[in-house]
Amino acid sequence: MKAPVLGLYGEADAGIPVAQVDAMKAALAAANKTFEIKLYPAAPHGFHADYRPSYRKEAADDGWKRCLAWFKAHGVA
Image (tube, rainbow, N blue to C red; front, side, top):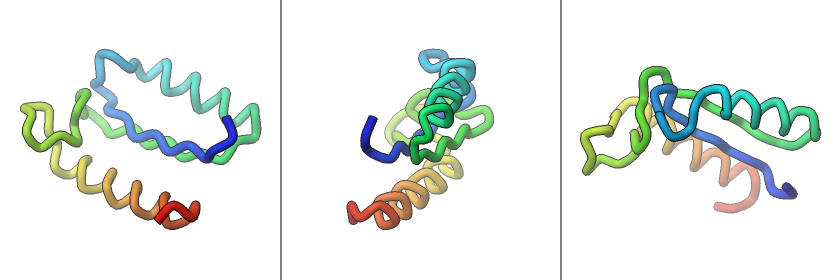
């Protein structure tokens, strides 16, 4: 992995268990990679999608702000 990693995950995502998120964080840290991982409490898969029942406005708004800041900080935007 050469690019910095931003991960925005829902704690209640059945497809991406918290244990997997924790393992990825540990692997990125062990490899001395630049990363930020945010785990949103009780948020399911697709919490960003405002057209789905899984939408969580607070988490989606925070994730969007983090994404834009991440892109800016890493020269993407």
